[in-house]
Image (cartoon, rainbow, N blue to C red; front, side, top):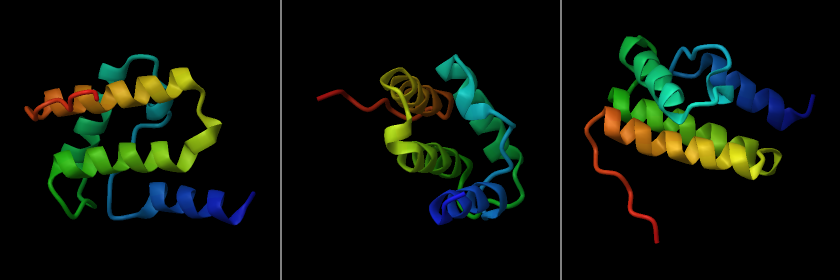
Length: 97
């Protein structure tokens, strides 16, 4: 296992962020990914910021760390989960350029 893989796994498992549902980023439905992240953020006692920011940060962190290993389909699903997360928290969706 490479140092960066261990580092990102450690951050995901033990940072002051969220206690994630196992396999959340592998779910097929972007809305289910967002619901799981929202629930984790709202129930976490480890997060330091508000639930929305914590959930979005963890999703963005995962996308950035997985990088080139994600297929275009996976990237699209995770980007769609960002919009779903915004909607679940009552935040405006980002407009595509």
